[in-house]
Length: 131
Image (tube, rainbow, N blue to C red; front, side, top):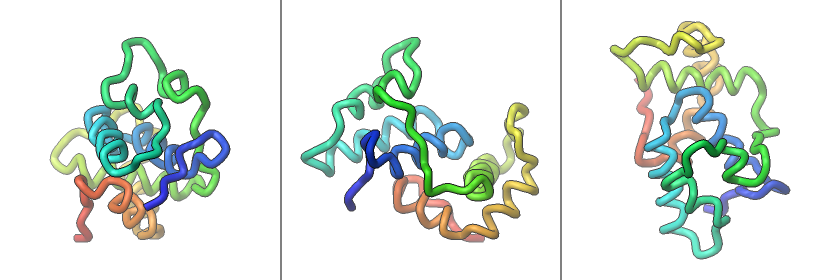
């Protein structure tokens, strides 16, 4: 799988960053993702090494050297990523700071099953099952 991880082609790193911001993944899962990419690809951006064990007091964009974005994601698809966070947090308290209500996030995820499919492809070690 070819990953788009550069400033010129940020689709995949932007998706990963969006997943982190939405709470669909946490920092340790981001590190696992980076290790997996490093292990499976000969040619990878060196910033992935810092994502494995991020330097203290450095933001994501400072580590990458650019602000990642996912221009292919609509706002409703970002809301669907929040839906993945809701699904993965079953039984736990929904993040208070989330701008999206859990039912709204799950409805967006139902409208965009492709987001769950993309999440499962990007993070196969965290498969979100259909219920």
